[in-house]
Every structure is written in C-alpha cells, then in structure tokens.
Image (cartoon, rainbow over all chains, first blue to last red; front, top):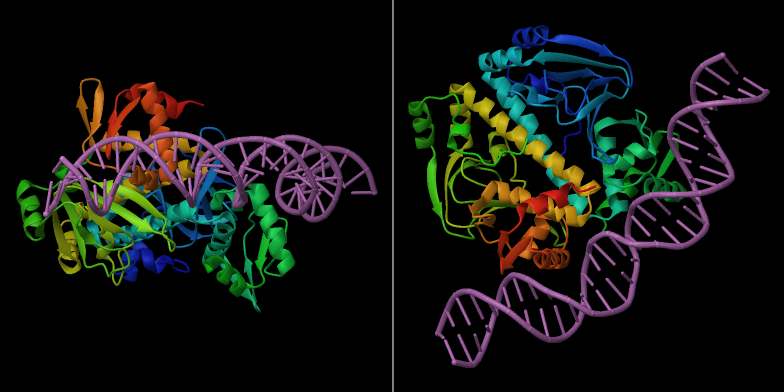
Amino acid sequence: MDKAGYNLTDFLYGLSKKQGGEIIMRGTTLDLKAGAVLFREGDPATRSFLVLKGRLKLGKVHELGKEVLIRYIGPGELAAMITVLEERDYPVTAETVGETRVVGWDRRTMLEIMTKHPQLSINMIRYSTDRLEDLQSRYLELHAEQVEKRIARSLLRIMKQSGRRSGDEIIIDFPISRQELADYTGTTLYTVSRTLSAWEKKGWVKSKRARIIIADPHALVLFSEKV
Amino acid sequence: MDKAGYNLTDFLYGLSKKQGGEIIMRGTTLDLKAGAVLFREGDPATRSFLVLKGRLKLGKVHELGKEVLIRYIGPGELAAMITVLEERDYPVTAETVGETRVVGWDRRTMLEIMTKHPQLSINMIRYSTDRLEDLQSRYLELHAEQVEKRIARSLLRIMKQSGRRSGDEIIIDFPISRQELADYTGTTLYTVSRTLSAWEKKGWVKSKRARIIIADPHALVLFSEKV
DNA sequence: TTAGTTGTTTGCGCTGGCGCAAAGACAGCG
DNA sequence: CGCTGTCTTTGCGCCAGCGCAAACAACTAA
C-alpha cells in the first residue's frame, strides 16, 4: 500500500546497471533551487521528470483561489508521465521544496526508451498504479473522515515519506507551513493551526514556524485509527 | 482531459488487427448479469479486466459504512491493472451495473503480452494517466466546490460517459439511485434528493426511481461553471 | 537595531449540509 | 390484485468547521 519511500532502483527495476545508466544519460539533468517552478498547470507538457535528490510538491488550483496539494514527490519518483501522451497539458504545478535535482526526458526520447525497454513501462505502470491507489484512498478519506483525523493521517503519511528519526521523535525534514498542510489535507489554515496547538498541549507534536516534529507518533496513529 | 468515452481501439491502439485479436484471445471472456461482483476490495488481485460491453462500477468503503463510488467503467476501459504487480490486493470492489461482458488476463499472461507488445504498455500508461488526472480533478472539486455544483458536475460527467441523446434531452441509460449519485459526488442521499427535486422544478432534469434524464444540459453546465 | 514581511494563534459568530424520522411512491412477485 | 421491499421526498434541528479580524511571533535585510 503506502510505501515508506521510493528510490532509483524502483524506477530501474529489472534493468542492468548499464542500461539504467544509459537511460539516465539520455535525459537532461537539472539542478534547481528551493521554490523554483519546474512546470506549471495548464502549460503544454513537454518533459517527464525523475527526481534524483530533493523534493517536488505537486499542486492544483481551483478557479477561485483554493488550492490543493496533490502530493510530495521525493527521490526515485516520477512527475509528469503524461508527457508520454500527445498534446497534453500538465494537470498540476510542480515546485521544488528544497534544493532539488531532477532528470527530464522529452516525449520522443521517452517513447524510444520505453519501446526499447518494456520493463521500464511496467515500472511506470507500477508507479502510476500506486499513485492512483493512494489518491483513491485519500479521496475516500476526504469524503468520509473528520478533519482532525485527516490531519493526523496526512501528517503520518508525510512522516513516512520524509521523516527523519531522532530518538523517539520524528522530524519532518522539510519546511511545511500550516497553509500547506491544510491544502494537503483538504481543510483550512485555521483548523490546522487549532488542531496542532491542541496536539502540542498533549505532547504529540512540537512545531516551530513551518517545521513540524512528531513527538509521539504512536499516539497519533492511535488517534487516526480510533473509531 | 475528460474524454466522452473509450473503446477497444484505445486499448489496442498501434497494434494490428491480428495482434489485437490474439491478445483478446489469450484472455478469458466472462458474461455477467447485472449486480454481479467481479472482484472485491481487499481480495488478492489475480486478474486484470477489459470491459467489452456493459458497465462496471468501482467502489471503495470506509471502515464505518460510508462508501465512495470511484468511477463507472465502460466498454474499452480497464479495471484492476494493479494485477500486473506482485502480491497486491484489489483496492476497490467492481460490480456490474447491467449485463456485462469482460475479458480477464492473469498476471503471468498480462506480463507476457506487455513484454511482447511494448505499445500495449504505453496504452495502459495512457489510460492510467487519464484516470489519475480525472481523480485529481475530482479531488480538487471535493475540497473546493459546494455540494450543489459537485452534483451538477457529477451528473454531467456521467452524462458524457453514458448519455443517450433524445431530442434536446439526454437520457442516462443505466439505473443510478440517489444513494449512488451521492456516493459518486461525495455527499448524502438526502442532499442529492433535495437538489434533484429543486432542479426538477426548474425543468433542468426529470427523474423516476433510479432513472435520470437531463432535460436542459445547457442550464446545468452554466450552473456548474457559475462563480 | 529597526522596519518590513511572512507565518501563526485564537476568539467569535455564522451556516452549509448532515442525518434522523416518517410518510409517500413505485416495482415486482405470488 | 394487494403485499413487501426498496427507493424517494421533505420537515426539522443541530454542529463541525469555516473564515474574518486582530494580535502576536519569528525570520530577513539593511
């Protein structure tokens, strides 16, 4: 279900080191600083990307301002597979969270690689299926679960993907504001703030501006699963 | 974005008639009556399916009863691509809506076919990407849009996928109850009922038990896009 | 250090839409 | 034809969570 994280070997699963190297070589490596926009929702999709280092955040905005944070993309994960198809626009905006290195391939190259290495297509289907499944679960949650529980689950999800253990505590090692957590969870800045304050009093989390530490992961898990 | 519908040629795009025939032949064709369960959420995924005729509905349930209707799957569409991966469970339940014919392949066969025909993998990525995009949009809607607008959009989406024109009106040609429309939209039976009643008074829709006719599609579109 | 910017907290009032309850409508079956 | 089960409608009360407003805290640049 919810994998802790991905890495390059997932994308290149079943291929030799040599083949993998060739594939990466055929793309263009980009080094981006924090907060850079890699591609923007609505623009024609020209390249697919693989994250090598750092993190992207994928967001989508609603006509009147409201924004939703679809997913954080870490090392070994793909963005904009849609480029493989003809004449499509990026459905989301990708922005770097910290310093980030990605490889990008244009459509033509991507198709050549995929035809040459059927295994790569299968790996892409694996990834895409995982993404779909993840979103289906969150779609269900968004409809069925109370806000506080959703916030808990969101935090845990992010923790699994990008947590760094430090004693009993787990540090989320990139800056995430109340607003972003709200966009990710499907609620508002205010509700997130109130909730985190309450949890801080209980000793479940600690937080500074845009930094979150999960002090008692177990308590959070119990809460998120409570009936 | 939102295609009106799929058909077999999408799944077999880029393959010869002969190759396509062979692929279908290697699967097992099943004829199911209305209301049959093809696979159940949580069971080990053993087969992938392609719908030839009829319709499946994919649903997912939350621990305490609440249900969400992820999608209706019509002719030319795939279900349970996840089977390609090892050791997975079906993430949703698939139930037939009317009499339905599907072809199913087990994992081994599917992988063989995909390795032999790289184009097929690309077609699967296309489909899976479309599905992901669709769900991303609905995820955004669920968070950002008011219930009435969501109901309107849901109806229009279903109409595009399975509407039959009859004069100015469009008939949704399979039974869909208030409860199902609610599960699809992410609201409740009651709210759907109230909303449809109101629209019926305005002459936008007509409905009998589990049957819906869109009498004024244009008005509905305008409403769904209104600021 | 100060001024400016950006993120966070909290009180407070309001409301969309949920969900019970109960009655009504329709379909199918024997 | 009437009985049974399923689907639909509508009144009514309630509350989770939204969102404004305003104060506060932390970081940045000069």
